[in-house]
Amino acid sequence: MVKAIITDFSRVLLFPKDRSYSGSLNGLHRELSQKTDYYILEHFELNMDLLRYYESLKNKVKLYIFTSETIQDDPAFQSFIQPVFEGVYSAVKLNIKKKESDAYKVLAIELKINPNEILYIDDTEANNLAANEAGLKVILYKNNEQTIQEIDSQLNETQ
Image 1: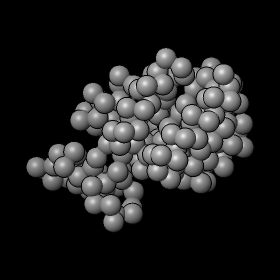
Image 2: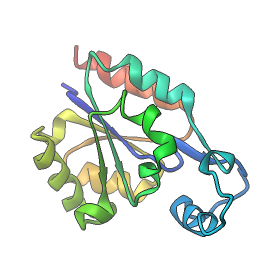
Image 3: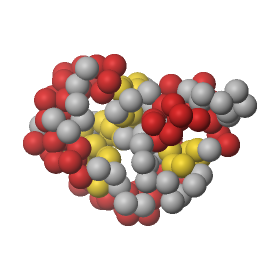
């Protein structure tokens, strides 16, 4: 039974407005934030459709974000994140690496939820492999429609 959904942030819930940009969103944010007139929402956009879908699940499962660095901490995102998610975890703050299965074991212990009761969504295959090795169910994010269908399927299996 799925008791919690943990989602990645960059390239799942946040995208660069310049869709041709393929580098690190945290790196781009660090670079752009050196400019005095920088406003994050002029360069990045939240995946509002997926955020609304996650919000619709609040009464069914616990929702968390697990991401690599800290872009999600920007104040511009807080009014969107805080009402939906029970917690936000950063690998860099926890001193763990998302590509290692121990990271997901640490997270499961932190959340006090068995790994096999967690559904993890990430756009990076290596992270999903590590999460799966730790016992989590995983979905490789490709787009909203596919991800929502797979989440619904997982949740329906457990009811």
